[in-house]
Length: 99
Length: 475
Image (tube, rainbow over all chains, first blue to last red; front, side, top):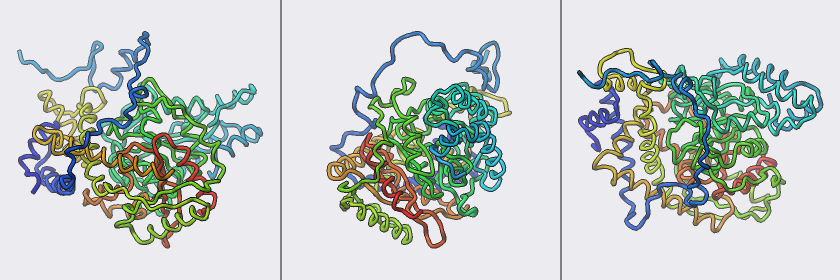
């Protein structure tokens, strides 16, 4: 096994997913299958290969910055329009800090 | 509808019908046909009629109505449309109404295009069969008991069904090319950065592309032309000049060197292989010089792709936490519980699988073994192509190992489903332009697409080969 159900539970916590017991069992199987295939990558010697972290390396093309001029922003009402709970111009969330 | 951009233009400029009439008819037909395939999730009559009337006014005033004037276009529901519900085929965004338009959408409407609706897809564009939609699968219009492919299954289906003339899809590891192949239409993944990703819901940012579907190669070239080019809203969009793709489509490919990667023919279904071999012979007859090439890292591409795409997906999908995007789980409690319940309710099984896998490969202690390793293997896959393009102008091969399969046939084995992306993910990892053009059919009548790939920003070579092939192909 490439991954145990304990590891799956830990990853679910990191990913903020509340998986059911049934989902944990299935997820462990599925992830194991995929990770077994992925294990094939270790056959390759990549010690002298630079990682490819972006597709097009030409800085002239991709690293451009726009001119720093003021532009109309999205606006508070539009930004909040899809909020499940909003109030007084803010997104509202459950209490974070206890008294 | 069997119309093309040119045929609609001729009708409009000949004053035979108005853009408004064409739009009304397109909407009526699409709504009537939709129950067969479930390809549309949302129709946009108001938006479509407004766009059509604007075209009619321009024509009446003697102005140029634009290169896409009056053409009914469908847009994959992962691409944002201001004021028009955009669900990503997810319960998470069931009621999400975007506050802005994607750049591609703005450019299409400025060119006179008429957006008539939003198409079904795999949830957040994750899947190869369109069975991962929260709103039910799409059926393949060619064979209704089969999948249309994915993730842009709805966008391929509407063009195949004739309920749109053009459509937009998104491709991360084959999500335009594979459904185009399954439905018998043309689908194009341009060079990475050629079309702005602004307003495309992020799945795997270093791999995501917007691209066209159409019935002819020429129409895809036209639609890409409208969308392509630098956009200051996407820092990864390329400023390389946009060439006139259509101008070079004269059917003459004599002397072009075409590579056939031997590595793309392992594990291919026999009938698919036959259709592809016949297509290669047709190109040879057209005067192309066919050369066998090697892309030696192909066998590692699926593993590499599923590390990178899931890692990026786990980061990109972190934003759906019950605070900003419409859905929040009823159960109150702590902030953490709210996050977890919302994500558990909102995401379907495939999204959860990819978020989990991505979180795992990025987690402490595994980063070097998985993510860093995958980035290095990605460089090797890209190098395979760079070396190949020193010898050839374009590469051809299959899109998928097999034609459209039956609904439900592969849902229980996610690894097998991932492995079927083998011929499309290599081009995605390298960021090169690649497309699927109809090449023929199996004995059962299922379409098979020919994949055509070219070097970065050499869309012209890709389109020339596909167009010349289309002109002599009997499909």
